[in-house]
Image 1 (tube, rainbow, N blue to C red):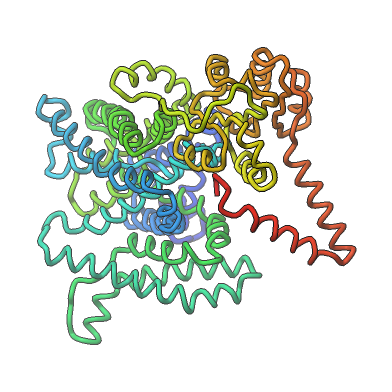
Image 2: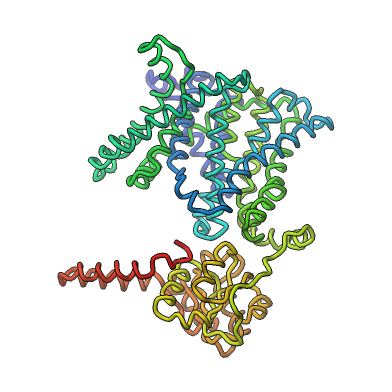
Length: 600
């Protein structure tokens, strides 16, 4: 059958025909899966299964490996670009502590659960290998960066407390995956020498790459900054240059010193290093944007290639174990991740929401399983179990994601019983009556508090802030307001907090950030509770603003209209030759409020 396609392609190389078949199958299935609201990654995996084990249209193992390796290198390069250690350190003790502990604790949970299954005779034929339980633990230890970021962007919740928490954990999981990739080749012979040599090679390559990136590469990207296409070529050149350098470290030592110290670095690790070493350059955002142009192409090839390695299940045992593994991955988020986040200092609601949003297996689990197959650590049945479990969690992730608040409500009675309580401390002195009640603290609310602190500090003393994010409460209280924890979409919480005693009730959160209530429904709730208060809300569109007015709002903020007014003023000032004066005023305004922003 493959020969017919080669003939029809007028002698095209088999690798070109195979890539074409992979893209055609993946594209057709992606359209169907999108219509069915199933993550497209599952479509890519199915395309690989259909092209490889089922039909045999692509049967050349060398072509399969080439396709998968190309996708793997670019996928890991992109993940490396997302790792910013400085941003993680700025997240505070709670983020660092939970990030450091979550992955290893979840791996141990998965390993013990897999061993327990074997002991009771469930899946013993599938999980019988020496490293099977360990790979199961590693597979459920991390969540999918691709899926979670896509769902956060689609739901406009990237900038919420739980969204930022989820992103921080994903980056820590990526770092842990790097460590696993570094140790993985030496699992068969875990002597100190080879492991130390492997880590030494990674450190050597990382240091050299970082020095080159900070010196030569920084200037090189500056030269081509105005040519987007050249930035893409330069970024890919850097990626594959580091990869080639890493796999040839031993060859270089042999030629120069007649030594073979075992310092060579795998292609995947080299790609991660290449991405991470330029993640903090001034051009990193543009590099990531440009590389993302080809991201989907290479990611598609990787997942199709992984799908080609999946054998047809010999019996129902593989499917049963895969379903159990998917269930373990989801359960671990509530048994391990949620309590850890809570004990690290996060409030239980946001800990639950973040854990729910991360209830899937990572593409890194597929990468590590794929490499485990190549290294002979696991057999094809275990590899198939990991892939099938990934597909199951990918399919159910949107359901969990969209119902995270409902899941929190369902779990709340259980959380109360096991001791994961709501925060009970209230900061500041309660007032008999408030001049302002601020519902939720988003970016606009943070800037509003800084503005009030600079221009009307006495008003802050008679301001109530009702917000979920306990981690920011101390910083809010330092500015002067009374701050309380609570769900401001609940009438009971609003009344308990004393919102009905406020002269002005304001919510600066746009509708795409509110999850458990609609802006219109919240305005109606506030208006019923506070008939004499002035109610100010925020809208994104003009129809939404009109609906808020009809629901009882006295005034509706339109941030994009305010930004447009400011933009027009800047244009008019620039045309009048006074842009320097406007800039000086703006810089002075920012400097006056620097350090007072609750959300930087």
